[in-house]
Image 1 (cartoon, rainbow, N blue to C red):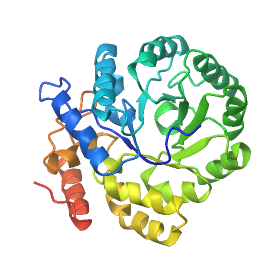
Image 2: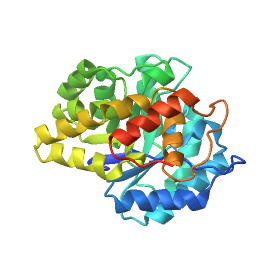
Image 3: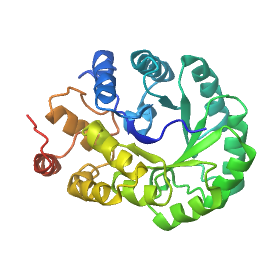
Image 4: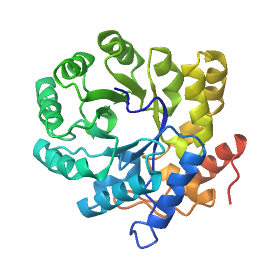
Length: 296
């Protein structure tokens, strides 16, 4: 079963200047996304900086997003880490928080074999009734999940219902789509590949850019789902420069800088991430202006 189709925002976690979580701003961001027709909220994914948050903070952030969303759109919680047992422990704590699904990244640093990846997800899937979305992002984990492994997991784990594919390899996405068919939802994990991935049968995107332009990204995915490929393609290409500038430094450094420039006080990033360099900030500001985003 699909957790969602369309645009899921990879939501930032706002901080105060002292780096504590800004729950008031978090609620504002959630409401803004819902008002602008975002189809799902992904909380504590990479963009939400969970690697620098305590377990207590992550649970509090997930609870806040679930409560504020109030079942209006699905909430997907990022729950993965590089150790299977620790992931299971966290999954069991999130099970009762009211989320609609869980996003589980491939184990980072360990460089698991394809058999190890299969066992990782097979064991985790047995500890939750919630739908699971695999997150394949080799550039950050040092580990690429092959299409054959994804298909094997889909065969053995009925509650693995989707994959966020952020390898950037369209040939890999095509092979994956040919192997899994309608058994898994494939979501683009790259904002510059929404149209290509959906043209291969993908169900949508889990988007960083949607933090800035939630309605616009929703509209691209809606057009693709409705078969309006030319309009969707034109919209995708119009944001190409902005997408490039959103990744001049590691995510979420630029997107938090952009939100701050838009007047949404999402605060700083946490170390070891640092604030956006001035040259990149100016380039980002120009790219935002070119697509009509006003900044302070």
